[in-house]
Amino acid sequence: MNWKAVARSEIGTGHQKQGIVCQDYGNYCSFGDVIVGAITDGAGSAKHSDVGSRLAVETVLKCFSDINEFPHKQDSQPLDKEEAQKVFAKSVNQVIKDNSS
Image 1 (spheres, one colour):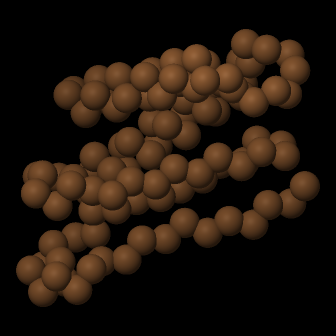
Image 2 (cartoon, one colour):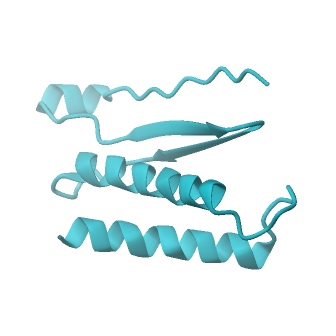
Image 3 (cartoon, helix red, strand yellow):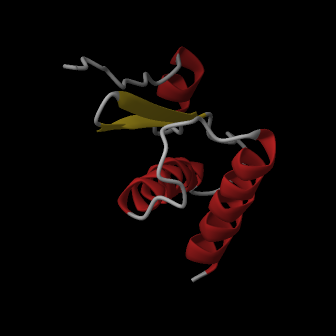
């Protein structure tokens, strides 16, 4: 299957007036017939939230890439709730780890 996807963010007018960079980020990866997208809404009050937004998205996509490269199941069933929670927790912990170094 041929996927077409667009990831885009735009600086809000308030941020433009204050000279603040866009703090949102989005990206996607495709794995055969599956496409995974991730988006973040940067915390405007946090220093370097633009970097945190990008790091969060890229970490999540890397997690899914790792799962795709080393699948723990041989079938193509979607993740169940417990597996999805584990992937989410792993992603959050990895973002925290990468951001603290």
